[in-house]
Image 1 (cartoon, helix red, strand yellow):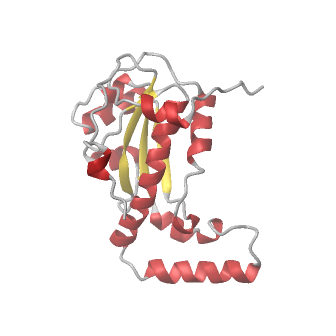
Image 2 (spheres, rainbow, N blue to C red):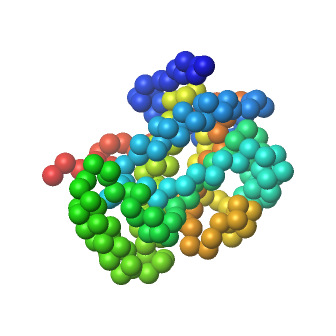
Image 3 (tube, one colour):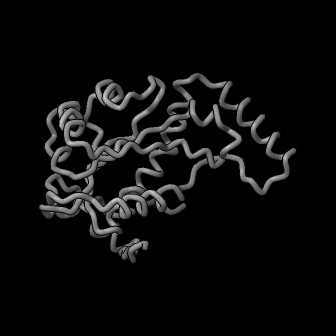
Length: 205
């Protein structure tokens, strides 16, 4: 029987989110993780290519090695789960038919696959990898809000040795990293928000 999962509103999740570096020592319910990713997989992407891939690290030995690769940042081992968010455009290109909407006529599906294949094969592996990373960053944002909405906390990280993390997870060289996200129940409050005034970041034309 699936449990009743309660979430906060999007506004509450955004307003209450803080970067948390100390977590309560209790595991995350697997159903909660499943629900988080059910929400995150609805993230939008250009041509619906969905290049994001999520590696959920819960093994304690692996988390310790991940902490070492993250220059000793303790939130990695403090959190019960650590999500490594990556982008894999080469996997996308190898399976383009999976991204095409099933409701399209067969002829349209073939046209779309041919168009996308020609477009991305005209780019270098590095350039299309960077393209996929811009899409994956959208999902990273959705992930943080989904985590917060489920009553958990997180801390987005880009300070880590990518080569070491790649080796730990057995990832191919072409895979790009959007970041690492430790998640769990907070055991600290985090810092109050300090953000720019709207006049600095918003321009109406």
